[in-house]
Length: 296
Image (cartoon, rainbow, N blue to C red; front, side, top):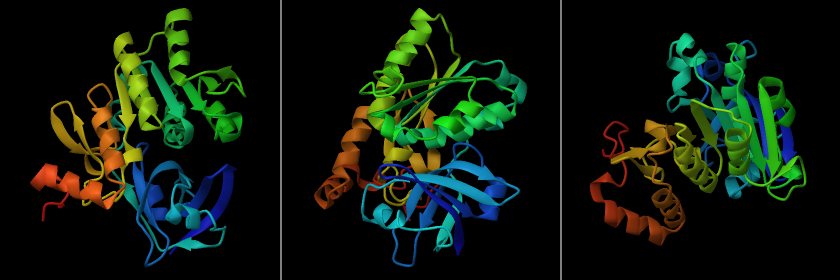
C-alpha cells in the first residue's frame, strides 16, 4: 500500500496528493509518469509526476476529476492509501539525459495550459536546480482554475500568467503571450516545451513552427491504460506510428498529427468507436510499436 501523506484541493475539480513511494521517488525524472490504482477493482490511471522528494521518499501527483475513478480518488484523505503506485514509466525529458553544458547553452520557454502546469513544474524546477533560468507561461481559463502559481514563480526566471477571460493578469491565450515575447519584446528561444490540452498544444506548435522554435509536447492527455495494451494513445509522429505511454509521453510537437489524435481520442470514448478503430487499424491497433507487448 502507498500511503497518502498530503491531500489538497488546488481548484475546482483539481487535486494534489503527496504519496509515500520511496522506490519511485529514488529513480524518477521530469517527464515521466506513474500509474495509480485505488483498490483491487479500481481503474489504472496514468498521471504525470508533478514533483518528488528523494529524501522523504514521496511523489507528488496532480489530477483533475473527469470520470468516476477520479471522482472517487478525490475523496481520499491524508492517511488513506493507494493499492498500486507504479513507476516511473515513460521516457524522461530529453534534457535530463543530455550533457548539462549543452542544455545550458539553450534558452528554454515552457508553456503550461490548465492542469499542464503540473508536469511543467518538475521540468522548470530541474532547470533551476541546475542553474538555468527559463521563461514560463502559464495559461488558465479563469483565475480560480490557476494552479501552482507560487511554486512556479519560485522556480522560473520569468513567469507570465494569462487567463482566457482576463480575470487575472493578462487576458488571452498562451499563444498571444508567445507572440508578444518574441515579436514585441525581442526574445528568442532555442526550445519550447508545451504541455496542456491537446488543442492548446496544437496551436502553440502551429505558432512556434512559424517562429522557427523547436517544440516538445507531452501527450499524456491521450493516455488511458498507460502500458501500450489498449491502443488509446496511438498517434502519428512524422510518418511513424507511436504510442504515448511507451514511446513518450514527450514528442516533437511539429511532427505530431494533432487533428488525427484528437479525433481518435473522441472515437475511443465509445465501444462503437473502439470497434471501428480496431477494424481500421488491424494488427497495429495496439502493440504496433513493437516493444510494448500489446501484440501478444
